[in-house]
Length: 468
Image 1 (tube, rainbow, N blue to C red):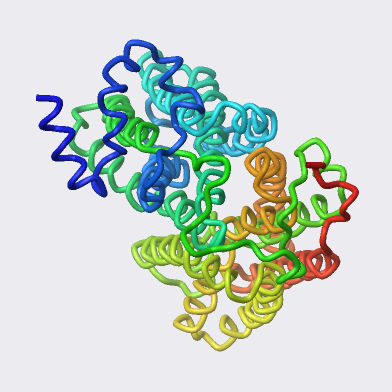
Image 2 (cartoon, helix red, strand yellow):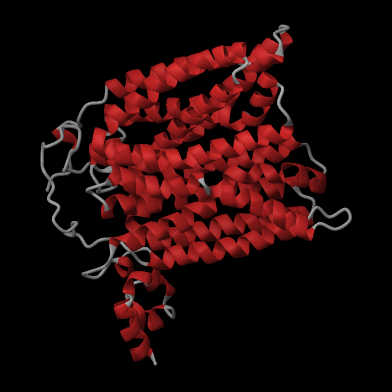
C-alpha cells in the first residue's frame, strides 16, 4: 500500500511534500526530535520551491489573527468584568512580545530550522488561545494577559521570522516577492480571523454567554491544523542550492552583497540601526492611523459606524495587497529606492489629507489613505529583503528578529502620538472634524526622519563579513 501511495505521489508530487520522505516519515513520527530537526527539513534534489510559500502563508495567516483581536474586546470585557482598555492590553503585550521574542530567539531559529520553530510557534500561539479560553472560564484578566499576551506573543515572534527567513533562502533571485507573499499572509490574517471569530461567537452565544470561550477553543483547533500543515510542508534548501539558470553576480548591484554577516556583528553596524529607524518610522506613521481608522472617518466626515467599519476593512485589504505588490516592485527598483518612494509619496499624501477634510472630499480621503496604508504594509514586507541585501542569508532570520524590535517601539509611538495629539486638540476646543489634521502633519515629520535614515544607508564594510 505504501509503495502504491509513493508511486502515485511521485507522479503528482507538486501537490505533496517530497514523497521520497514518506517511508522515512513513518519512523520519524516515532522520533519527534529527529523529525523536527533542521537536517530533516533539508530538501531533496528536485524539490519544487513553490511548495514553500503555501507553508509560510499557512502559518502567517493564522498568527495574523492578532490584527483581528479587537472583535473580542467587548465580549471579553463583558465576560471578565473588565474595561476594554484592560482587554486591549493583551493585544499590546502580544505585539511587544512579538518583537522581543523574535530578537531573543532569532539565533535559535537559525540553528533549529523552520520546522521546529513553526512547531514551537504553534504550541505557544494556540496554547495562548487555550489559556485565553480558560481566562474566560475563570473570569481572570491576568490569565488572559499571560495567555494571549505573553505566551501567544512569543508564538507570534517565532512564527513571524522563521517562514520569512526560509523564503529568502529559497528565492535569492526574487527576495522581495518571496517575503511579500508570506507577510501578505500576516497582514491578511484579520480578514479571516475577525469574521471567523464573530461568526463563532454568534453561533455559540446563549443567554449571558457571549460565546467567546468556545470561539477561542474552536479557533485554536482550526489554527492548529494549518500551522502543523505548514510545519510539515516546510523545507530548507541544501547548502549549495540555487535556482536553475540563476547565478549570483558580485557587484552587479552595489546595494546587494553576496557576502554574509553574523547577527552578533550585524547589529553593531550603522546599517542595522539605520534600517531600524527606517522600519520604526514607517510603521509609526501608519499603525496609529490604522488603529483608529473607523473613528477618524466618522469624526472627519460624519459617516455612519457601518461605513467606518467598511473603511477599516478596505484599509486591511490595501495593507495586505501592498505587502506583496510593493515588495515585488522592490526587486526591480532596489530596496533603497522603493523605501524612498514610501517616504516621499507618504509625506505628500499625508500633507493632502487635511485638504480633503476641509473640502469634504471623503472619496479622495479614502483613496489617499488606502495608498498610505499599502506602503505601511509594504514596509514590513520589504525589510527582510533589504536585510538580505545588506547582510546576506547566513543569519538573516536572527537579524530580522532583532530588527523588528522597532515594530514593538512603533506600536507604542504611533498610537501614543495620534491619540495624545488628538485628545489635546479636542480639549483645547478644536472641532473633532479638524482635530486629526495636526496629527497628519506629525506623520509627515516621522516619514521625513525615515527618509533621512534610508538615504544614509550604504553597503556594509567588508570588515564585518564572515570570513570563508
